[in-house]
Image 1 (tube, rainbow, N blue to C red):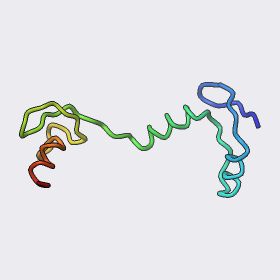
Image 2: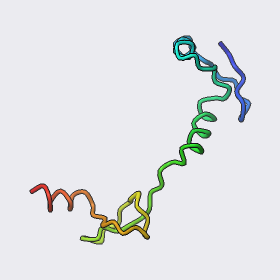
Image 3: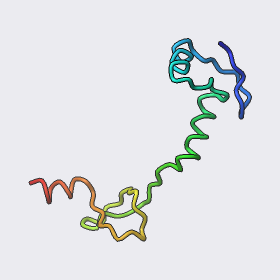
Image 4: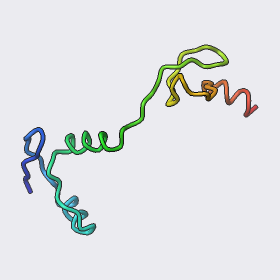
Length: 86
């Protein structure tokens, strides 16, 4: 089945298996391409933000979901495991 997508106007295909699943869940057929649907989903979910931080034990740079203003202590995984799983 061929459906013209919204948003970017590109034509995309909806496969038989996807149509079958949508019918089983009584869900409507998609009106946008996969890329457009994922962009819309990301806007709704608001995504995860990663902040550049430093390990508070070794000062090595790392990425964390906790912002700089957070009171949480941030350690790199290897240091944490070495300290608490030895």
